[in-house]
Length: 278
Image 1: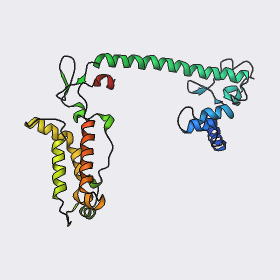
Image 2: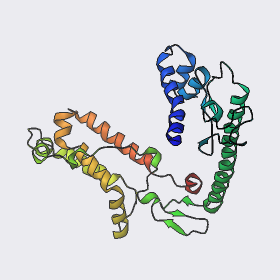
Image 3: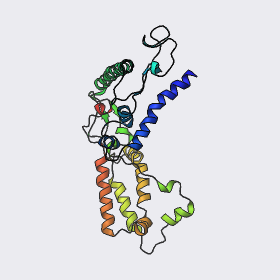
Image 4: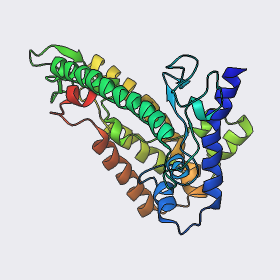
């Protein structure tokens, strides 16, 4: 019963926050600051204007510090919200001495947590950086350390810088056969071979792993397999002619843009990826 009571008391502040959100005008500067994501939250606004809410230490409401009571100002066996850390007042109205004491208890715990986490995560970050700070992408596309040991033959297995990667859906993957035929079949009066040839040549130019030997060609195929599937799906001849209605010049421009974006997305040689990873 006490646990349920504590849970309900903790939820009171959130309810107050949602009420404040609805009641404030759109012209309120503080509300505007929260909505655009600049700083603060609706909980902060509710603490300023309605009530600060329940104060917790170690995940529970304020427990007895004296015999059968939290502070000597309260009667024994008082399980009411006020005596167990519920701050009824807002920052605007001001806190009573007991409320201020409980608020300081909760604030102290938050401060200690912040300090402990900062020191731990800071040290972990330092250890990571010092252990892998020499790892970089070389001009042959491999990832090596300062001794020349190969960490990866191709950065991320596809040689791409994840900053430039975009998410695209492959619609043709789950399409019904009838729909697939309608979108991709070549039953057109304008002959589509020209588009197919341009896409083929584009795929040959988009190299992640240069070279003609068997291993390099296999690595190139693995790195660009999904991209090529997506490219053929998006630039299917029927789509280009009927759905996109591209002229020859417009189609050439699209192909050029794809090529420049692809080359921009390759991981640049000399990138110190160890530090980036850390």
